[in-house]
Every structure is written in C-alpha cells, then in structure tokens.
Image (cartoon, rainbow, N blue to C red; front, side):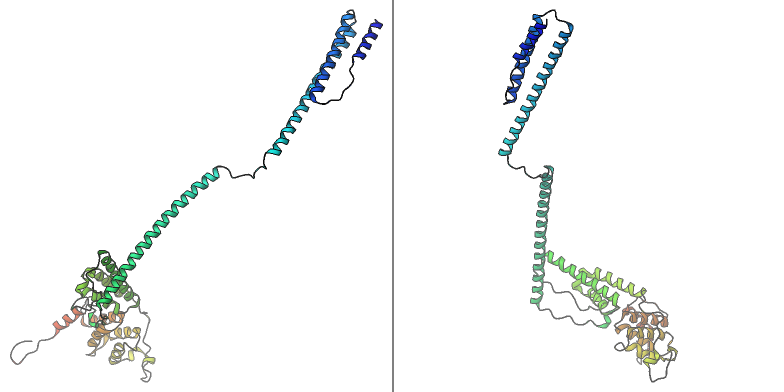
Length: 373
C-alpha cells in the first residue's frame, strides 16, 4: 500500500505541468482546465487501482476535487472579468477617437416650442399694431386735409373780423346779434360739416367755462349771439343750455368775500371819511360807475350799499351797471338791489323784461289835444 501511494504521488508529480506565460484570458482558462482534468484523471485512476483504500483516502480525494472545482471557477471568473475589462477599454478608446466632443447642455425641447409660440404671438400683435397705426395716420391725414380745405375756403371768402358785441345783448332775446360762425362754402362734405359743428359746440362750452371761472361778461354775450343768429340755428339748443348753466352758476355762487368792506380811507383820502356809513349815495354812484379804475369787489359792495339810498338817480345808476358793467357779479348784485328797491323780481340778466316793466310803470301824460300818450 505504501508503494502504491508513492507511485500515485510520483505519477501526480510527473503529471503536473510547468507554468507558462499567460498571454490572454482564453489561454489561461484553457491551461487551467487541462490541468484540472489531469488531476481528476490521476485521482480516479488511483482509486481504480486501489479500490480497497480507506475512508481517509476518499476524503482526501473529495477535498482535492473541491479544490479543483474552486480553482476552475475562480480561473473562469478571473478570465471573464479580464476579458470584459479589455473589451470595455477598447470600446471607450474607439469612441474617444471617432466621436466629437460632447456639446454643451442645450435648452429643453419644450422651451424652443414655447419661445416659437411667443414669437408668433408677438409678430401677430406687431402686425395688428402696424395696421392700427396706418389707419390712425390715414385718419389724421384726412382730418388735416379737411381742416386745410375749410380754412382755405374761409380765407377765400375774405370774412371780416367780428365786431365787438354791444353791451345790451345780455338778455337772451331781442334783435339779431353779430354772427360768430364762419360762412360755409357749398363744397362742404357731411364729415366736414359735422366736424365744424363739433368745433362750434366746443367753442360755446369754452365760452361758458370762461364766464363761470372768471365772472367776465363778454363770453356770456358771445353765447347770446349764438342764440340770436339765424345761421347758427343748429347750435341754438347747445347755446341755450350753456347760457342757463352760466346763469344758474352766477346766481348761486358767491365770488366776493362776505366780510369785505370798502377801504373808505383809501378811496376818499382827503374827505376825512372813515366808514361806509359816512358815504353818500352820490359817492356810491361814483364807485359803481367807475368800472375802469375800481376793482369789481368795490363795485359789488357799492351796489349792495345802494339798497337804502333815497337818491332819485340810484335806480338809473343800477340799470346802467346792469347794462354795461364787465363783471357778471356786479351785474347780479346791481339787479338784486334794484329788485329790492322796486319790490319786483326778474330773471337774472333778463334786461328786456326789466325795460318792458319800466315802460309799463310810466304815468301817461295829458296832451293838449286831449289824447293820452
């Protein structure tokens, strides 16, 4: 049995291959596989040669078989890993030589689409604005040409400047006044006619605004001219409305300071007068009639103080102020004082009604021929 073991060992030692240089993963795996097969063959042959071996020899064989299996498995895994690594390195090297440099990260695909939609909307909006601008410029050009044609026609007619309106026109009725409307030429289109009417309407409103804000008489007289002129019949309602607006505003608006008192010492320096109670009706007449030198506040106060006057010329002075004073506030207070003196009410600025009433109050005279006048 000892000889058999020694023979087995010598056979095993003789069968062991010499190590060779590993050139590749396939060669290493093939050499290891042949070596493992020879070991298994020797072990099986030894078993067959000595079938009566002990249990210890069979355990050694099992251990050797297990070791051989582990050797084969580890060799195969190592060869597989080596092959995969080489293949991966080769692939990366080829890609690095062929493929260009990776581009920079780009904007997501959704952004260009949204940007394109926004650009399209902006382009459409720009087109709409351009069209609107063209229409606006065309309308402005047409309007400018219309104005130029009307101005040229008015210049060709050679209309004379408007004369100043007489002071007696501040009543809203009576004789025809001075026309403020430009003469129309036959070649006026409906659009031009509406444009001229609109301009005249705005001008009437501007006159009313001026009369209310400044208290001046002249703008209101101009509105009265529109009421009396037959050529402005299409503007009569507008003029009547603006006249009533000014009339109502002046009637209820108090422009003067209620605490204002006449500076008697300054107005009559050498007379020795100090208070308003020292003034005579003649002095008040003088202050009321002097519209060129005295401010409108002084004239308003003089009209108010003439309420208690006993002078026969007071009514005439008040009527003259109502007909000619350039301040509507002076006219209003002169009329209020006159109404309180005669115990008769009239519409504000209605001078024809006042004149008609005064004419009716005159006493008839007895003529020599026996007829009444």
